[in-house]
Amino acid sequence: KLEEIRKQREYEELDGCTFKPDTSRSKVSAPSGPIVIRGFGRHLERQEMAIKQQQELKEREEKVFKVNPAGPATLFTAPKPFALHKTYHSEQRSKRIRDALLQQEREVCTFAPKTNEGQNRELIARMLDESGDTTAQYGDEYGGGDYSVAGAEAEYYR
Image 1 (tube, rainbow, N blue to C red):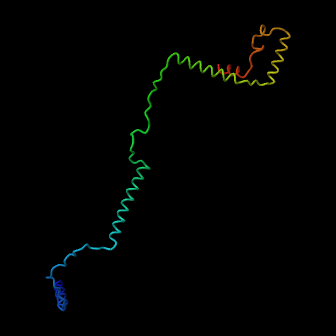
Image 2: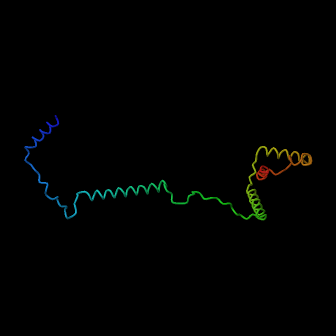
Image 3: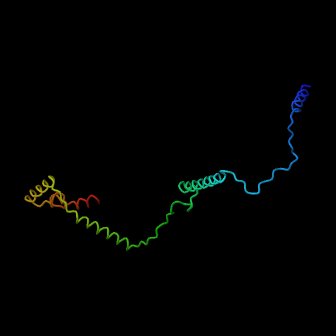
């Protein structure tokens, strides 16, 4: 019942309105030329620029971070055994060359230090020479001998 009263009041309020639109006319015709919207061209241009920037960024990231490396699947070269020709003669030749180089190094070493021990040894050797043959009594250990650096090195590396 309340609902009916509300509808009645609404009708009475609208009954006093005099405006009645004419809706029987035809619709507005579409314009014959292109529709101009201000800023639309700039909007499309910005969208294209944004897409281009995204593509450039993606390319840089792929290049720098190697997301999809364009190259061989392995990063390292697989080692292969050497096929060097080894014969008995080449081993002999390399041994001769090594020996010749070692001999050259020994010839270059001419340093013979003068130490107190060396002076004592010479003094003892002179005293023993005066008394007799030292090699017969004591062997080569106390008499003479090669005390150069090259000789010491040779003894050390044997």
